[in-house]
Image 1 (cartoon, rainbow, N blue to C red):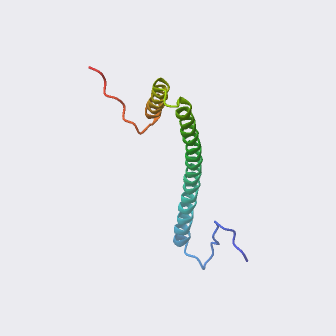
Image 2 (cartoon, rainbow, N blue to C red; image 1 turned 120 degrees about the vertical axis):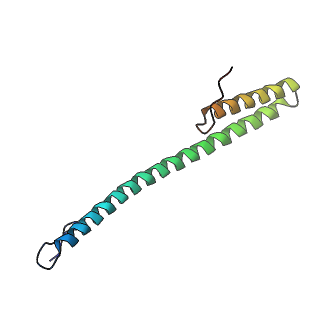
Length: 106
């Protein structure tokens, strides 16, 4: 006779206290598995976000390289590219949750 998973036959061959302990262990293992599934989904989301970020950074660098090439040594155009890069860096820094908030003025 096969006993379904998660159930325990209760007859004279099994100690009820042992069966209760096994049920508690089983419940704990199920909870661990549920939390593992949540963590793995979060890791998948972070991996996807990282891949997306890498693609965006690659595109930004390619765009800036093209802008520098187009500037052809013209100081005003090179300065504009530098200004654009600094503005982009400031926006990224401000959007990064790991960046500490600036101290209040005054």
